Figure 1 (cartoon, rainbow, N blue to C red):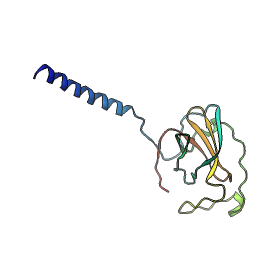
Figure 2 (cartoon, rainbow, N blue to C red; figure 1 turned 30 degrees about the horizontal axis):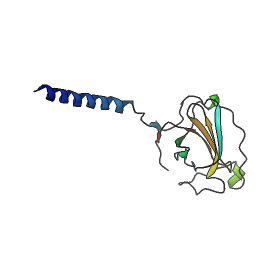
Figure 3 (tube, one colour; figure 1 turned 120 degrees about the vertical axis):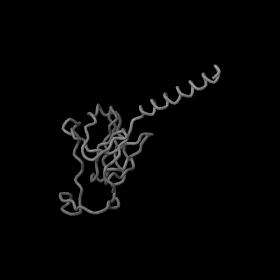
Figure 4 (cartoon, rainbow, N blue to C red; figure 1 turned 90 degrees about the vertical axis):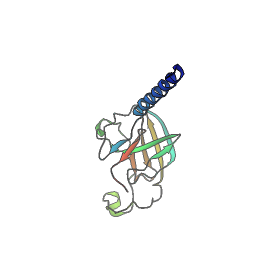
Length: 149
């Protein structure tokens, strides 16, 4: 093999090795099947009203400002910032004190599909619908869910 062919072959091998290493560094989605401990949010840095979303099933991401936010249930919720009380939902079964388990996600009611997004340091956010009936913690880390709605 000539010097030129050897150099070309080594370049290809090095490119393949580097490509494999860089692929391994890409963050794979985290599989969610229950609560997660992703750390603790830092200080609130922005609150944005009027953000569309409907995470009724717990798997629907909310996109805002170029970031996709994934809903999750923190297993370390006691360490999270205290939140102001959400307005009490009205109507429905038990006026918001009882929930019926349905086989499918119902269509959003008034104020269920738009809400306020509070973004925290550390890749966390909190979204609450304008109706106060739907709320969730969010992370900017890609998540895959073990359930389908």
